[in-house]
Length: 273
Image 1 (cartoon, rainbow, N blue to C red):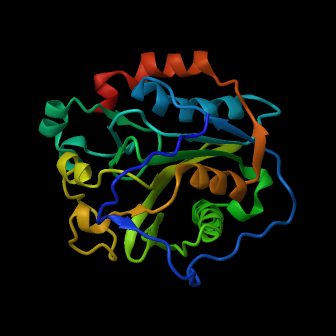
Image 2 (cartoon, helix red, strand yellow):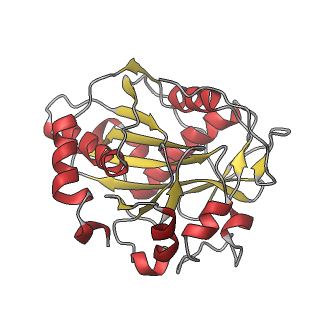
């Protein structure tokens, strides 16, 4: 179900739309043929299951002969910290503050650094068939393809975003989206964030300064580095779905596989430490 519009005070971390300018480092996405992609709008009640579902969708597609591409849109119901597969939690996360605030820390199956998500942070997850996407052959090409499509979608809303670092999207010098991927033989998972009404101060509270920072960030603290887009959530969801031609609404999801992944991995302390 699509998010309802809600009135909210605008913070200084909101980047408002302005005159459209060329996103010079993102090439237009080539539309050689029309693809059929499923659209799954589903947020679960458990943060561990929400993160596990992304991997379950990848595994499901990989294991089926006729696995379909899917775009999942979801938004956590409460704050959570999500760390990368190779993250050192004690270096990237303020664990004491997470415990005090009751914020769960969950490890995802893809790489990258720790993020904070929650209400006001739209999450998207793409499962793409590798041999059907010539523009996404290889890691760098996949970044260009996905981020280019997202940039086109945001441009239609009036935001000319840039790709900076490995896989960030920025607007007017501030990060509004972070992204990562995991590849299997036939399919890949590419997922990320889109900030629109997120309490930026929460990132400063829950995360430490990352050990590795892209050059464009410099020494900026989280609150000076990250910002929200001034956009309605329904418009943002529609723009992302249109960018990937995700038009076939899907209601089923791999519940049993998700529950197995939660039980055996995502809810385990050994995985999340």
